[in-house]
Image 1 (cartoon, rainbow, N blue to C red):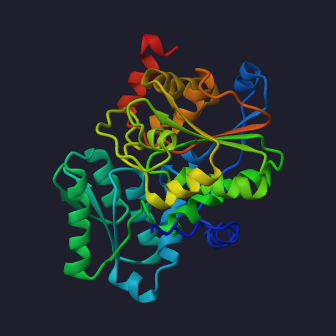
Image 2: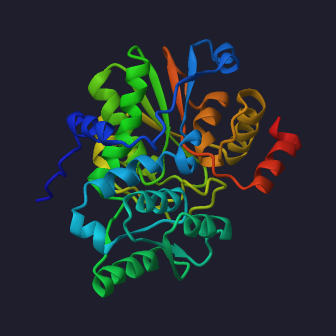
Length: 326
C-alpha cells in the first residue's frame, strides 16, 4: 500500500522564513494600475525577478543548504539544474563556503553555464538526456561523497518556496487569488501551502505554457504523469513530470492549473517591460499571460508571481520588436 508523503507545514515554512539571510530580498507587492483597470480587480505583482540571482530559487537553495549538517556542507552538495536553480545553488554555496556542483546537460545555454560558474559552482556536463542528469548526479555522491539533493522531492525546497506565500499574506491578508508558474511543482506547492493555511478562502491557480504541461496534465488526471514532449520558450518550466511530494501538496491546496499559448507568453513579456518596467523571463510571465488572455478570471485582490527575470538580452529584444506581441 502506497503511504502518502508527509506534507510540509506552515510552521516549517515560518521557520524557513525566519532563517533567510539578509541577502534574500523580501520582494514587495507592486500594484499594477494598468492590469487592475483591465481586469476590474486590485492587481499586484510579487516580483521575484528582482530576487538575488534573478529568481525565486535563491530561497530554496539557501533553505536546503542551511538544513544540511556541517559535515555535509563541508563535503559539498550537488543538484541537477539547467536553469535558475543552478545560479541560486552556486550563489548560496559561496555564501556558506561550501563546495557545490551542478549537473547540466551539454545543450544548456552557455549563458547559464558561465553564470553558474561565475558564482563559484562546479558545472558537470552530461549527455542531453533527462535520465542522464540523474545518473551523473548520483555518481558525484558515490565517487566524491557529495550530498545529492533531488530538488523534485526535497521537502526543504517546498519550505523555501513557501516563504513567498507567507510574504504575500503578510503584505495582503485579504488576498483573493494567487497565480503561480509551475514546472516540477515545488514553487506552486510551497506557495499554495502557505496561502491556504493562512487564507483558506483564497484561490491558488497554477499556470503552465502550452508546450510544457506536466503539472496541468497530472492535475487533470489526478496522478503524476510524465508528458512525452516538452517544447516551450519558457526554459525555466521544462519538467517532464512533477515531483511526487510537490504534487501531493498541489492536490491538497491548489484550486486549478491552467495552460496558456506560447504566443501569449511572449506578449506578456513585452507587456511587463512596457507597462510595468520589469524584465521578466518567459517562464516568469505566464501568470500575466493567463490573466490577459482570459485563462484565469481573478476574484478579489489578486497577486501574480513573477518568478524570474533571467532572459537573454537578445531574446528580450526579439520579443519587444515582434509585431504580434502588441
